Length: 430
Image (cartoon, rainbow, N blue to C red; front, side, top):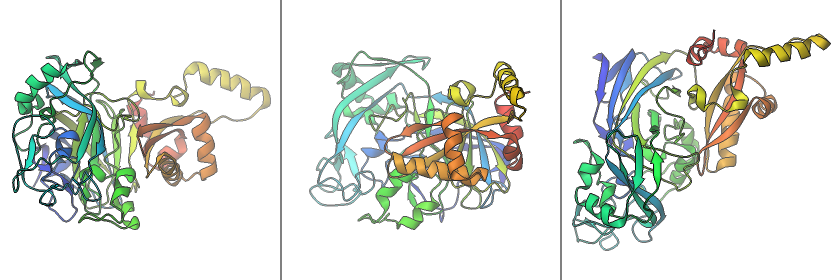
C-alpha cells in the first residue's frame, strides 16, 4: 500500500534490484529519510561489503522503467554533534581487490568478518574469530570536527578532545538505532586542530536503485569501475556498468532547494538516501569529507517517458555558474540591439540544466556527461560541446570521475522534454 509520507529508516549496504523495496510512496508524496553517516563509518566496519550505509530503497507509485523521478530536496537537518575524516591509503593484507567491499582479517583470512570494538583508536575494531585488528584503510592526516548546537559551524579539535569524543563515539555521531556501522569517531585523531568550517549540508548519495546488484558506494562510473573483473562476489562485467544510476554523485550543489531528476531502471525506481556531508568543496579533494547522520526530506514526482541514462540536476539559483544563468533583461536588450543591426533572430528563451556524467577518470566522466546531454537534447555532440563552452561549463563533482555538465537549453527542447515549466518554476522565471 502506498502512502503520502513514508519514513525511511531501514538501512542497506548493497543495492540489489532483486530485493523487495522497503515500502511505496505515492506519486507526489514525500520521503522522510533518517540516514547514518555515509563513508567512514561504513569503511571501518569490516562486517559489510560496502563503503556506504544508505536507506533501503522506497518504490514510487507508478514509476516504470523508462520513466524519471523528480526529487526535490526540501530539508537537510544535521543530527551529528561531531565526525572524523581525513585522507587514507589502502592497507595491504586487510582486503581482497577492493578495501571498500572485500574487507579481510589479516590473520584468519575471513572476508567481511564479524567484528567487535575494544577501546578506541585505529586498532579498536577486531575480528570476532581471532581478535586481530581489522582496518582496510591506513589513516594519513586525520581530523575530528565538532559542531555548534545550531549546526551552523564546525571546528576541528586537538587530539585530547578527539580522544574524549571517541569515548562516546556513537553519541557524537548520533547513529540511528537501525545503523549497523561503527562510529568513525572511534578513530580518536585530531591532526588538524583549530580550523573553522561553516556548515553547508549536502547529500552525496541519493537516487534510484541500479538494475544490477552493487555496493551502495559503487553506484557511479568511477567507483563502479572497481567492480569490473574484481576478485570478489560483487564483480561485474563492463557492460553491466550501464545499469548504474549514478546515485553516488557527491555533487556539493545537492543542497536544500535543489532538484534532482533521476532515471528509473527498475520498476518502482527505488529511492534511497545516504552519505550526507556537513560541508564539501568541489572535487572532494581529500577523497572523503565530514560524514554525518541527518534527516532528509524529499518530495517525489514521476515524469512519464523521460528516459534518462543518469541524473539531471537543477541547482539553487546562487549555485549556477555565472556564464549559464538565465538571461537578465539587460543582457537581452543588448543582444537584441546587436542582432537588429544585421537583422537576425536570437535564441532568447533558454534555461540551464546540469547533466551528471561519471567514468573511471575525469576525461571519461566528461565524455559520458556530454554524450548524455547530446542524447537528452537531441543536439549533435559537436554542437553540445560548443554550447557548453560559451553558455555553460564542466564542474568537478568528485575525483576521480564525477562531473556536472551545465548548458543553457533552448525552450523548444525543454518543452519537448516536458521540462520547461518545471525548470522555469525552479528559477522563478516569469
